[in-house]
Length: 208
Image (cartoon, rainbow, N blue to C red):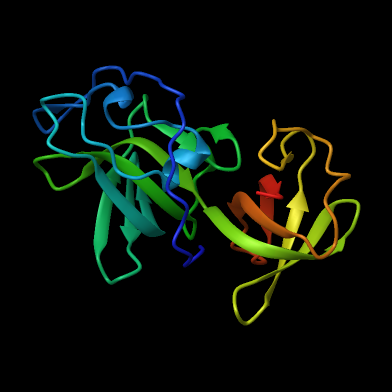
């Protein structure tokens, strides 16, 4: 997972959660908590639009155990979280997916509502999501070779067919990566692969 301070900006995709009672509380519409696209993982916390919710709850870390629909998460600062999934939780892992794709060892960001039993009832979970500022050092057919940070840590960004897109100079997303050039600065939004530390690229932004 990236230790970068992420850009914080929201998107306007909205979806309502169905009612799901947990510990006597009710999960409300996700529109009260924020967007559900990948960028929303890095968006600034929003004041709740629902008077029943004082604020959104957030958690991050590595998944240490999965017990049914509850994810036990070891936070980066020694804290521990229990993330309760429901049939209405939005899950992102490079693309919208289901709980079946979540594995022990994955990293996550989760947003939801604090429950009386100490869990966080998640309306959105982003699995292995990273947001990196890199320099393009090499280009191959199926990957970008990147460096990241002051130490120029090498990163392999994998180009995923039917998924990876690019944005040039703030323009619309396109599947055409031909304008990516060696030496460019690039923002990489994607999903980390714990097995080899590479990144599946969801979006590469250059010229921003």
